[in-house]
Length: 131
Image 1 (cartoon, helix red, strand yellow):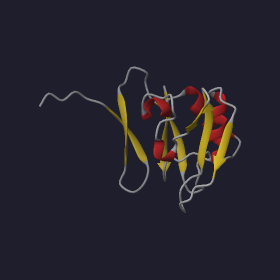
Image 2 (image 1 turned 135 degrees about the vertical axis):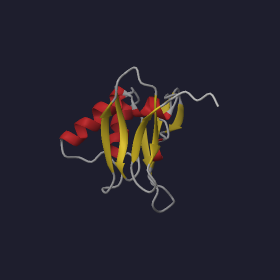
Image 3 (image 1 turned 180 degrees about the vertical axis):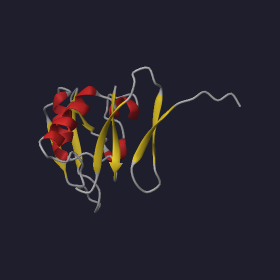
């Protein structure tokens, strides 16, 4: 299984990859509104069943429809888009200094994602704790 993690910076996708991902999910009515707050990403909305839904993407917040951040980060469509953008020399991140890395882990491993203090993330294997 492939997982998208932050190698440097934050998991904030660019508008281009966010829109491509929304379209890959079958939604084509999309609107982008500038954020009122400096330093924040634009608001991206898509029309779903007649209602405008906000595409949550800042710092890995799940896309509407994903059950968890892990489901979002392992979504094959998202992974494919990130790989396509990167192979074309396009950074899929909102901010040019940020970098996303695709990591392959065994399918049978239960894992989590945590972040290093101040930069990047790492994947850890979940272990059972009884006390």
